[in-house]
Length: 335
Image 1 (tube, helix red, strand yellow):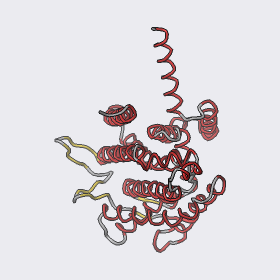
Image 2 (cartoon, one colour):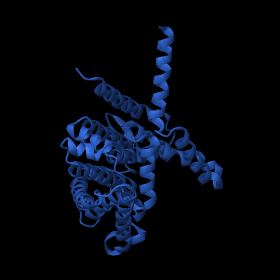
Image 3 (tube, helix red, strand yellow):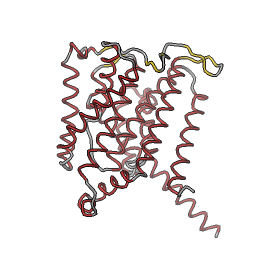
Image 4 (cartoon, helix red, strand yellow):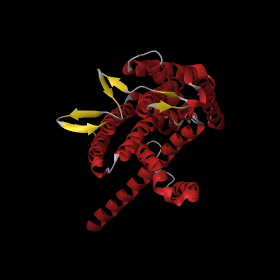
């Protein structure tokens, strides 16, 4: 028998799968599929970042650096050296994981503003390297990335495919693939959270001193979750590069890092499904506000500010708490 927490998480995963299956009914053109695919890839990235920020309580303002490293490793390996996509993605994830472990060991000893500045510096260094190494990365002009290939099957946004007798476009195939990747990313995160590692991370978040007293190796677990979140970013960066077909150093920019961390905070730190909602809102909001033209940025900032003022715990935790309170009131009134 599953306990209540596991039942809740399994129910959430099933609901997410159903939403991803139903969403295409409301898509009217290929752009909607393209936007939804971007949301799915970025949402999976912030699910990994949430393990670091929401559960371990460690901030990262340079996470787009790992996203960019994964994207460029894949782009260079497949485009320049002719590697297959999956080995390139896996090798990139391993390389980024090693980099994250090397830089994570010293900087995760820092706390508060010092940790924020250190992770910010890591992101800046990676972005500068990608900008300056023109011979390898193409510099500010960027580089082309071949279509994603898996088991001899090439997945391109411009292709046509037959699936279960249905003729689908490349963007539809990419949306299906990205949806499966998102579900796997969420499933892995939920299992990690409920494992002994997850409990150790929550204890570190609560109090590092108390965690150390009861025998938790805080340095080990902080480094571990930093590496895991970086691998998440690397894998999704690789898929993002293949999907876009072209990348520039902007994928490792400070703005991208801030976007990631804002998604986590807006959706609800420590809420796996909440950060997905945060990713959806922050990716779709600019599209909704496009009609405001010059006022778009002002409106965007105002909405975020009001959300944080009235929903400080994040969108999903706040909405869930409201629904729970109403149910309790109804149950009390019925009784």
